[in-house]
Length: 447
Picture (cartoon, rainbow, N blue to C red):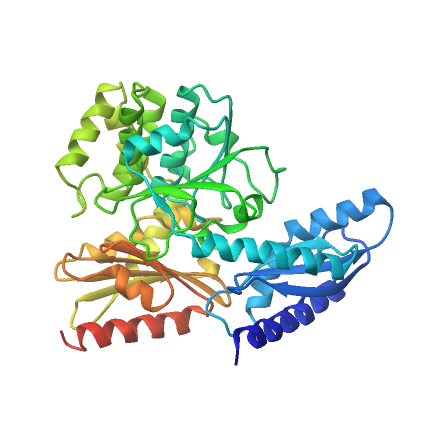
């Protein structure tokens, strides 16, 4: 089937499913009478623009549209139960004033998007990156969905840098909540959420710890085609997204790169920025225990210590202190550890019932996979988290010489050689069967 034919089929399936969901009723009193007029897919099938007719006064129509957009995540997950696709498209709602005119404009936007995709990113060095930041006044800083310490820490550290440069309009936004270990950092309480807040005005978007537009969740709705996007990342990406950027996989954490940009800009590292970047660094180096730690990591850490941070307190709050909820989940997860491939793979899991029982979220499971990986003789530690009946997240940690990113890439995931993640649009049992089968294929049944 041609891409055009597939796009048409997917759009029709999504139109039918959205219409069904609207017919059943979304539990939001703001949603009035709505008719689905059509669905248009982006060329890469990552986005589904749903055009709806809204009824009532101007205020009622606006409220309905806001409610639909707030429910887009839930609608996407419901649609995912009926689509056989590795990546379920992001759903975006638009009012249908004139579908023909909208389609004409979309064709223009798609042409712009395709032109941008075809244009290679302009790769910058540290000095060039710092100089490029000085060319604008208003910024949006973001990172990937389900942020970890490096994502949120480097984002907040970058915001500190921009303010130190004299930028007065700096906004941070994430698709998901700031992780617990970053909530005490400077600026964490002001982080925006596209599902809850209005889009801020800005000139340049700075994206840290990710170089793929489909990994930033619904923040992408705030970054339309034609936006100047600067990327700062330490992942290996074949076709990075963005207008310009600094990508260097030799850094252990993007937090380290932010400190280097401070230096390149000739701006003294502030204590607040150093705290943000230190959390980012110790998260991605496992407090300097992982193999990605190098001499430069320690030199950068020394600079952050010289900025006045309390490294012992930060490490204690990030790794040592544990809430009762987190302890209960860890206790259950450790009790479920099983082995495969002659003991070279150790895996465990958490169910939706576990999260409900302990009133917990995904951040409470952060680090549990390391208990699997740190067992003697284990080459790959795996932790499965069932978030919904047909949605399972997987964390993968591996020993040196066994590339976690290669395993994750096979299933559409990504990450680093020693740490990677995968999202399965499948139930826990199916996701577990698929991944363990792949690990057995790579390592052997009795390796």
